[in-house]
Image 1 (cartoon, rainbow, N blue to C red):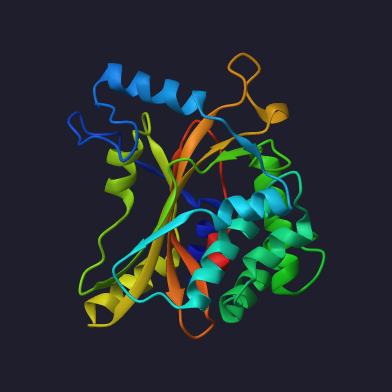
Image 2 (image 1 turned 135 degrees about the horizontal axis):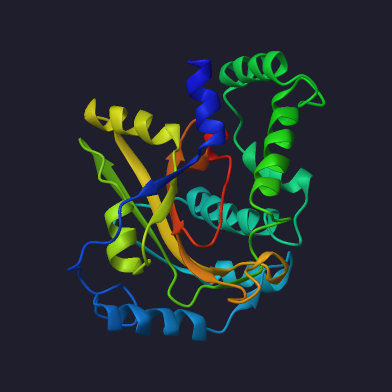
Length: 274
């Protein structure tokens, strides 16, 4: 169990198979899925006007302006936390962010203290000195710094576009239908994509099979990586980012269950803690 948890920590990004040859048109732009359509899509993404990700009214208002599509009742609490999730996430992993903001984001709604305790004990036995303390916060701090260093970045989000963004909220029951196929066919993501291996997804799938109904929210935005950590010849690259969250009624927060990005633009997060 402990070994599995450690592997989850270090290998959170899992390679997904390449796009199928014939796919429906994406949700934006009307591009075809052949090579010419893919290039047209990339040209479109690269032509989008972007806004800088920075804490403040401009980003807050942009997030508030994203429309919501739903066929179920959405409470004011759910809507507020959905928008707060995206705003806090972008700020925490931008130049406006900090270690404390990132850790606060990971710990919103609490953490699995039993799992954290096992991982802390294991890390202290295997890598003495890696942790500077003995709490879940200390563990997240150390892992957060290591993931950034391993990706050669100080942060992930430089600029963002919400031009084609919509919050879609819906209920699911009986069987879990992955967001993966939607991201690949509607996002026109070239080549492989990466998805965080989020343990919560398996738990939610089991709950659905047991007859429970859960409420989900999913959305997409375009982000651009920081110039200082981008490829020197290619410059900063952009990728559609797809997220699916599930509502946790006990803690009254949204929690991530799936995330997809272009594999050429590095993103790595500790969503196992949420």
